[in-house]
Image (cartoon, rainbow, N blue to C red; front, side):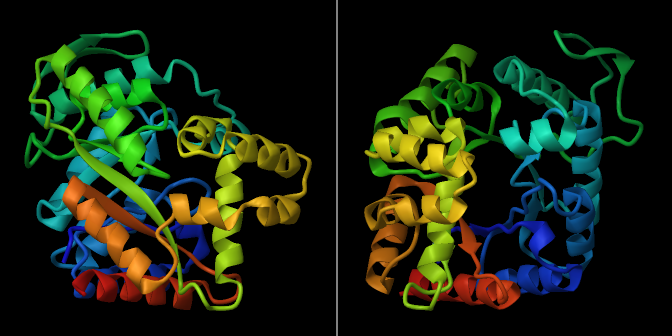
Length: 334
C-alpha cells in the first residue's frame, strides 16, 4: 500500500475513540498518525497515550504551532515521545491558523519565516545532544543542553507551508513540507522549485525535504450529508486569506473571495452551498472509488505522501472517521 498517514481533530472524538482510530489505522497498514492541535486535546498527551497502545505506526504532530511553546519545550516533548514510542516520533510544525492563534491564544502570527528558522535550528541542535548557545531574534540560549541525551538526532521535522517562502524554509532545514489543497500544477510549478531553491541556499541535497499533503476525504460520496460536510470544510479554508494563494493557483480565485465574504458575514451554510463541485473535485480526495484510486496513484508517481483527513458528518463522527480510512485503504490496495 502507498505510504499514507491519517489525521483528525482531537476535540471531535473521545480518547477511547481516538485510541480505536489509531489502532485501526495501524491495522490497516497506515504509516503515520498525525493529530492536529488547535482547540481540542493537547497533542503530546494524546500521542503519549497512543505510544503505549500501538506498536508500529509512527506518531507525531500534524501540526503544533511555533508560538505557544518554546523550541526547547518542543524538543523535550518530541524526545519524550520518541522514548515512549520506541523511536516512532516525528514533529510537524507550523504557524497555526489565524483564528486559533489570535482568538484562542491572543498571539499575532508575526515574522513566521524567521521564527520557523529559529525553531528548526534550536530543535535540531538540542536533538543532537549539543551543549549550545544561540543568539536569535526571538530566543537566546546560554550554555544549555537537554539533561537526557535524545535517543536520536535525526528525528524528522516537518514544516507546514501555505506560502512559497515557507516552502523554501522547509527546503532549507526541514525533512519535509506539509501542504493542503495540493494540485499537480502547484506541486510542479511551485512546490518542487521552491523546495529546491531552499535546499540550494542551505547547501543541502535538493531531495532532502519530502512532500506531504493533507488529503481531505469523506465517508463515501453517496452517503447523505457527506458532500455537504466536505464543502463546509472547503468553505472554512476559503475563509482564511492564507489559503487564497493556493485556491487561486488551483483555478478558483473569484470563488475564494466570494466565499470568504459570505463566511465572514456569518453565512456559513450559504458559503458552503457556494462551493462548486469542481472545487471539491480539484482539492479533495473524494468522489468515486475510481477517481480516488487515480488520485492515490498520482500521489505515488509524484512521490507525495498523503495524510488522509476524513470529514465526518455531525452525529456520526467516530463511525465516519473509521469508515473513511477503511475505504481509502481498500482503494489503495486495489
